Image 1 (cartoon, rainbow, N blue to C red):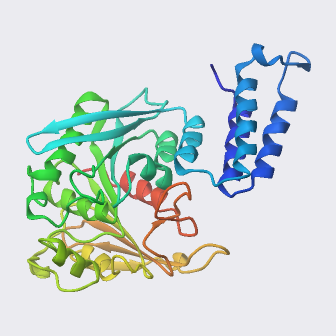
Image 2: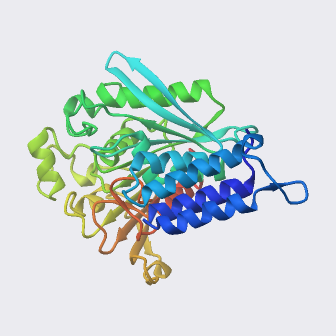
Length: 365
C-alpha cells in the first residue's frame, strides 16, 4: 500500500497531539481526514475499496481509546515509524567476546553515493527503540541520507543494561564490549554502501562514556564522536570508582592530563543541573582541545520556552576540533529529545541535529 502525503501528515499530526495528551485534538484530526478522503471528483471512498481509510478508522479508534490512558512509549515509536519511509531492521553480531543485537536504520533514499554511518550507544535502562525514539536520529538520517546503528546492551551483560565503560576488560581495543561495537561497525561497513571517511559514534550517559572509549581505541574506524552526559575514558576501573567519577570525584588511573593528545574531533553536551553525572566530566572530556577556544556569543541568548546554553569551540595543538555545549538548568537527559523516549529534555537545544552537523563537517582526514 502506498501512503500519500496527506494521509501521512494527518497520522503524524494526530499522534503528535496524542503525545501531548490532547486526545480530543487527535480525534478531530483523524475525523477530518476521513471526511476529506475522496476519489475522483469528490465521490466518497468505500472502506473496503481504500486501505488508507481502513487505517484511518483504526487510528480513530486508537485515539479514542487513548483518551482514557497514557500513550505507551512503544506505541509512540510505532507511530513515528509509520511516517518514516526507511527500514529499521534487527541484526545480530557475535565474536569471541559474546553476541549483541543491533538495530539498523536504512533511509529510503539510500540509492546514490556512499552513506555516512552513525553508531548510537544508548544509556542505562534504555534499548535501541527507546533511544531512537528519544533522539529522533532516524528522522534526521532520512533527511540527510545516513545509516544509523543502535547496538543493544542486554541485561545479561549488565543488570541495568549499561555499557560497562568502567570495567578494565571493556576499555581497550579488541577486547570485550569495544570489540563487539567495533565488530558491528565493521560488519555494516562491509555489507552496505558506507563512506569509510564518515563513520561516527555517539552515546548518552553510559553510552557516552563508551563512545569516548571507542573513539580513543579505534581512531582508524571513527571520524568523530559525540558524548552526551558522559565521562572520559579511563576514569574508573570498577563500580565504586565509576560512582565516584560520576559525582565528579577522583579519577582512578587516568593519564596525566598533560599527556592526553586528542586524535579525533569531539562534540560534548552536558546539563549543568545534571545530578547523575557531574558536569566536571564534560570539561575533562575536552581537555587537550584548549590550544585555541572561542565562545559562540549568539548561543548565549535565550529563546522563549528553550533552555539557554553556552557553546565553546575548541582546537587542539594538532588542529583537532571540539565543541562543548553547556545547557543551563538541564538534567541528565538528551537535549532537544522527543518525549516518546526516556531521559529526554525537549526544552533543550537539538543535540541530535547539532551532532549530525558536527559529524558531517568532520570527515576523517
